[in-house]
Length: 401
Image 1 (cartoon, one colour):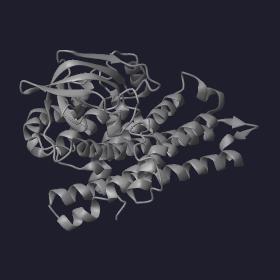
Image 2: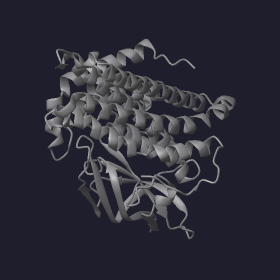
Image 3: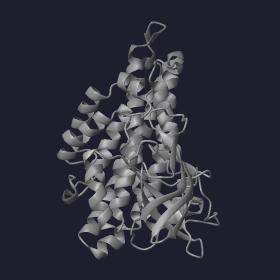
Image 4: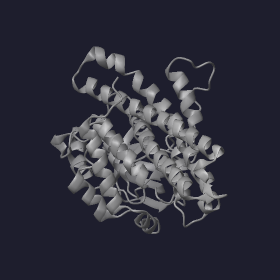
């Protein structure tokens, strides 16, 4: 497998970095952290209209660019470097991937053009009080009444859930056994839906509690079991998040190196001291290893997409087991590397790194919350062992925050 990105993909990264440097400097990030929505709707629409970022993975027939996971990962990495305050992960990754992988053509035609253009913001509501990322954590119920579906219960920690126009909700259906899982399309302003923003460690990425009281919903048609769709979405979201974590870690390392060059102690830059050199060398190793893991996962996702679209049955069978395992590997490794890089960035900066005025703490907070999102490293290592057949008595029903 070739780990190198194409010139077009490299240029995409450079373009997005330049755009974010101009539109999302630290001052703008801090301003948006204090606003009710947490992001700039006008900038969100510009991202869709001028750069087409939200529609990168959307096929051209729905108004997108028809690109793949690698291009989305390139963008996520740059957004991580800039700590962009925007619902890209929720809308362009979670919601869009759910629609692309379901079997509901009507929902795709109605929702994907708006999501791709930036006119709509979407999200996926999965976790509840248990913060589990598996089917056992789904307790919100869906019941059919007079040919329509009504949802009752609540969801927690929903990314950008308070501002999303489209909330794709995972619910347990009342089919007599209580074991069915479905994915339902709910309008953000639907009757009976109450949304409350939650206080979070990371003020640059919003989460919300959603309460459903007989909320009308449309069930998405799926290929097979509803949870199979959710599992596929979570794997692809974990890969995209791993790319973002590389961007966060890379920027934290750059900040630490820059400071080590200009901060003097005992008449010399602190970067000349062996202890600081070793610390930064260790972080560099972790960041570059994480980059390799994330890039491998992106390319594995690209191969899986290609195999599906070309109906290459033999290739699809060879590729299908790879992506879930690689997704868990990348998410676990990149989570640890990102947290280490941001912690050591504060260490190098010393006292100033702990102050509110310095951006180091913002990167640490993003690293910590991203570590837990879609399952923490311990969860993904267990999942990886299970997926490659090394499970030895692990609790297969165990979830993770």
